[in-house]
Length: 239
Image (cartoon, rainbow, N blue to C red):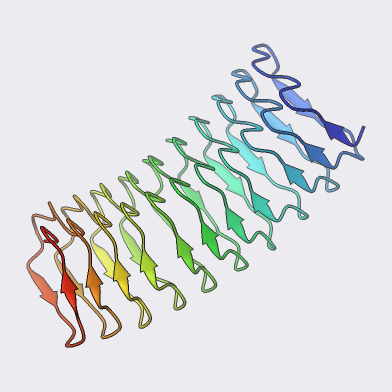
């Protein structure tokens, strides 16, 4: 067997352990989606593709180590895996897809490979326990709501190539107290840091030219903002 077809084991409620065949290359969309009792998955190194929502809603899955030939985490791959605490990603992954880990409320720590350049929409939204995160230097895209609602995330250092913080990317990160921007960042979009009440000081670099609507709204403890001379536009309700 080299491929498991779409929705092959969809909502198999009593499936607990999964040992996949040694020549497997692809797990298709939704193949194990909703397998609520699945606690363990062992991937052979031959696997190259995990389809969208392949393991979404596997609410008792606690730990996953992905094979080394995976190059992208597809959309909603582990969405709603509410007991997932640890994920090991191989070097060579270049993109974390939209909603890939959305709602993984037990996820504490994840190490993004240095090869990562894109973090998709809502990729880690509502990962409430996520407290440690290093953004690799190659990251160029952090899309809408990527880390929204990561309540225990305390600090972010932006990678050197990032030019835009997308809408709602870090909104409702209520314990974020440290924010280090880079020298290429040009735009902070609408509600990017909405309701981050522990932020106290922001140093905007000279590269910044636009701060979007409500970008820092409801940051009630914000006391100091250092504006660059080149700043062109501060939109309505930015602070």
